[in-house]
Length: 393
Image 1 (tube, rainbow, N blue to C red):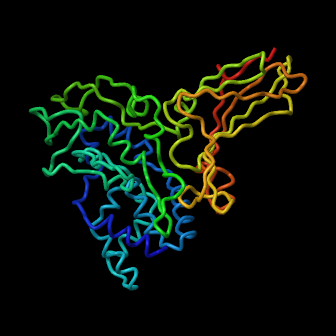
Image 2: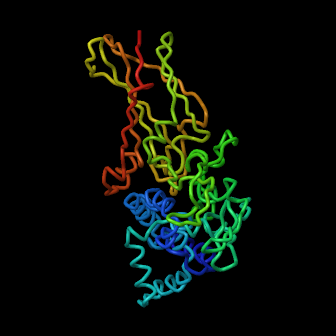
């Protein structure tokens, strides 16, 4: 398995590009957007969970952690994936040579602050996204870059007073940049056979294309200044670079509407998003808990739980999606409604709904003996004061 990964590695990283600008430099002028970005998952991936999964995959496939990291970095940290020294590093490692390159990249592989980051200049150096008919490419492999040094791309062209040159690109008005990473990755086993399902298929799951990714995950377009603290700043229609998603309580809460049908004693859960929930990383699990109260407001002991997620298996046992040979899809489909038949206890008067959102399911933690904190693993608890409680009678 190790040499299969290495062959793929050489194909992926045979090219290299100049280093990207540090996002801290962008903050000098673009303070508002950089502050939003700093709080986003693009700036702060869940390194603890990410590293734990990397190590589990490396162990299960008898592969160096840096090799797995390099493949994942195509989306999680494109600047690392495109490091010109990676080929030298791999050859040095195989030959047992220690040098400045191996020391530098070993340090990156150990550092939670450097292991995952999608920077400002990565996205704003994109000229276009290549076609990907076979789904075999991902992230940085799909990017055609702006060739002119010191020029950045985006939804706006340069004005006369700007510090650096901008070029307007239509790709920023589409979902292509988002889906370069969020509709990937086709994985293969040691014999080159595609695994049961792609790792991330959010784009393919979409059932309503009237809204873009940015409409839901980057706020509505609002008027704001292009740069901060400048007398020559332009007022433009821009979006907040927060990239809200599955780790944001408000985003998950807004993904569901509930109805209660007294005749059938059923809760109907409406997925308001146009893609599967949960989507993305296949270890995620939604746990809907239905608890009951009597007429006096006392919580009754009996409760019910329903789970929704993609259940991956290998040889019949729970598996990370990257290692699986089968998959049972029990997620909520985009814009679909799901009926949950309740079985309330005798004295039940009201049902309350809450969600336990596991960023990785407990069975996968147990299967791979992952040593991660509850903050990284979840559950994130989502309770509904309005719209999540119904009188049963």
